[in-house]
Image (tube, rainbow, N blue to C red; front, side):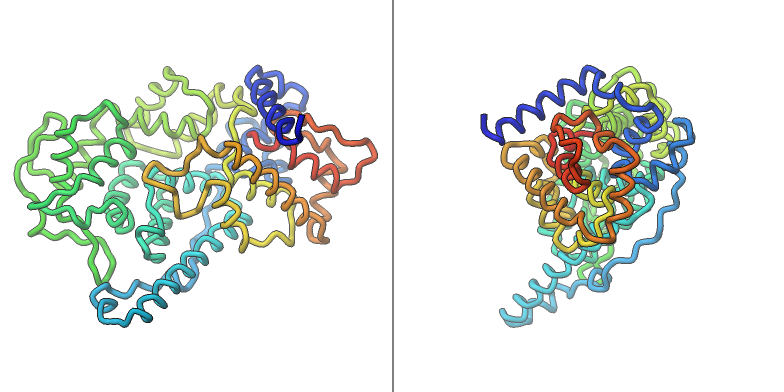
Length: 448
């Protein structure tokens, strides 16, 4: 059997083992629980976080993660500069326009490097995880928007609302300039409606398929007419003359609805609370528990408190029983490994490209459905993951990493840091570097 085939077989065995619940019984409970919580609600069991959580019970540990202060954002300078209006650019020469596009692409690259650098050192791990979740929910992309400042501003909006109230976050997202550009609502006018935003708003952002009609989409698009982006300020602007002020019938209710009233109508639909609750549940737990989802949704719809919903999910028994049954996202795999092993030579500059090849291109999901989670462990991506692990190991040999590596190798069985037991044996006299290499190239390291 080839090495690649053996690796794939081992990975399948690990998933099956994790599903039985047998894989988690070999570890001490306190560390096992802290590790599981940090793998799902953070980026892995790094020393600082494990030591902070170790003396706490489940509820206090979750509260600690929810209450971690979220530091202010400081974007790269280029991402704070408004884009040159198209009207002015149209007067430029071809070379000037080409040079400007290159500058914007370079700024987009700097924004991605900034984001990975922040994820490597940030302490508010649950807040960062939730911001990533909302990026994959209210999708936009640098490729289409072509304005790093708008993408940065959208990131700020998602970051500030990540654990706030969903009703406020939804309205902010619907009126976000990057999203309006991405889903073509800038072309949504009374005489020529564009249904892109309305369709994704109902299908992907709030209710899910089967809970609305094609008429609801058409009428919702009418409610969103006139909502666009100012070509100079690049801020959201409502063009009254473009707006259809006629009566619309949405979900069986008639009125002269606009974007705010449309959001209110959506929030009143029972499907909305259950859909968002299910999406968040599946972000933390591998399988849905419909009874618990309905119960959490019934509480969620009263005040739309995202933090309270996340708290309920993380304190559920289903969450704590679910160890080792999910696959790490590329961000969790790479960022989590670097944070855990404390590499001083693994710089953030090359990480965005690595994440892109693994299927999670920050600020650039492939389409409105977000990153293709089900493709993260496909044959080609799996090989990239192995190569990434080997690359990470090469960065874990500098002096800056030494204290962290000593902690990992001397104070605990290295296999404890994986979500399930390692299936790759190491020689008893293997040095620390060899044990780390065995760990990060083991199929078990892909699980959380």
